[in-house]
Length: 347
Image (tube, rainbow, N blue to C red; front, side, top):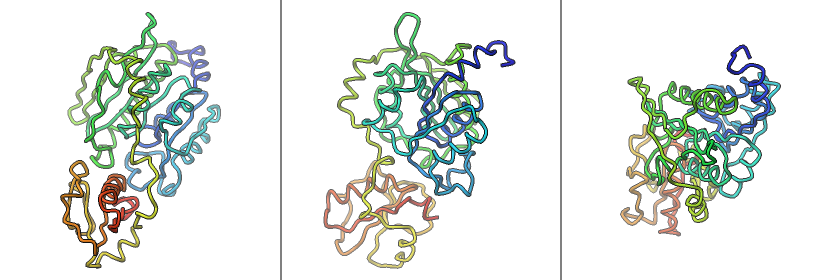
């Protein structure tokens, strides 16, 4: 309120605003805390995941004692203790094509704090169709990306969206767990997203409209990619009708196709066990028989022995489950198991 550009009027705008934070990981958790601390009136959190020890280097509002607990519950409790004038609620399940319109309908601004490319496009397309502003953020190793999409302009048109920058969804971009990311860039991009939200609500400054900010933390360089609104609502509505927006990380896995880390440890010496890693450059605590990247995974190219049990391995158990599905589709009677939770849980 001391800032003359915001003042009491701006503080009331923040108090009357509602924000949906999708993803409560490295981006979403600090975004939510900063927004609540700024005086946002209502925040709704969405995440289906639990706190894992591998999260802690960049998801700084979780602690060792929170491992195994739902992220939304831990984060909501943290916010309530420090921002009692913010009404915080949460949904402890994935956002999907079926529920996305319901979840975004009651808020003023949607914030993308996910590390799933599929969900990023789902949020973008749903926000375009329902005319909701979307504050976008993403990470890759030492790079961060920020933009504010789909904002109503003075002439009645809407600013650019994600498909104006990247019309088609890439299929081979790993998430933070797979590619790794420097924890400092995560915090940098999260606060940039908060900055965009505060500007949108209070009406001050110049939001990142019709441009994508790309920041590199190694060189301390940044550039802005200029965008033009060319992929409009009608085209996106057609895409939305035919696209499933399914993400393996958010889907329910068949419990009969799983092997728990403790059970795998007991069976490592079994000669009839064959382990296949489906991501390159994994730090493995055991030897695997083959390494095949998930993008090149083809069951027909594997020399199958029906007397063996095959165990698919990756970092968190998502890509390995994709491989398990492919193997079972090709060989329904083959014993194929997914390492539940991947190497993160095994360690």
